[in-house]
Amino acid sequence: MTNMSNPRWIKNEFKEEILTGKRSSQLRNVLVHAFIVEGIVRKHTGRDTFSSAILTLLLKEEISKSEATLLNELSSNRNDLVHNITDEKKFPDQTSIGNKQKILMQNIRDIYMKSKFLDKNLIQKYGLSIRSYIPYKPFSEKG
Image 1 (cartoon, one colour):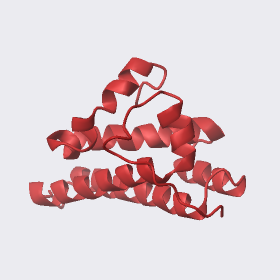
Image 2 (cartoon, one colour; image 1 turned 180 degrees about the horizontal axis):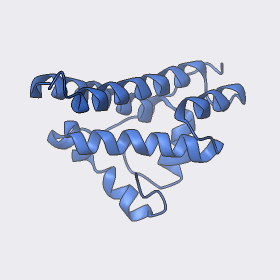
Image 3 (cartoon, one colour; image 1 turned 60 degrees about the horizontal axis):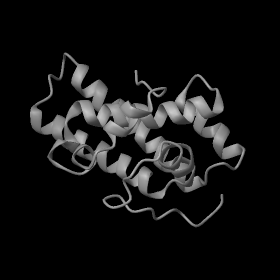
Image 4 (cartoon, one colour; image 1 turned 90 degrees about the vertical axis):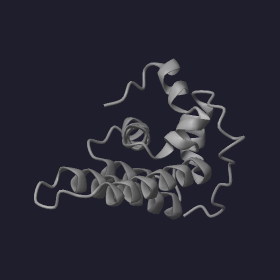
């Protein structure tokens, strides 16, 4: 999956061109960031599945309902992209895959911009310098 124990690797994945530039919608970059978010959430809660980890954070009031919604959308969008690519019966076209990649990357940027949980447990923890190109505008509600 991802190497969350290597801070240099993590910082490299947060370069501006990967998150906002021409490379931002490359399949590898989109999936790596989806897995980074999932890895942080699952590791923090100790849960085996992303959905149970999200629910745990919500019940413990470590994330707001709006953050939970964004995280659930991430899971849904990631699964949609992966299943679309691997569906032998559909054999998706590049435009369809590209559109799904763009939707997923926008979802990821929204999470990095709005999630107080990920700001604390990812952006600040790893000293990531992304605020010049992805500003921090967290949700204001608690639940």
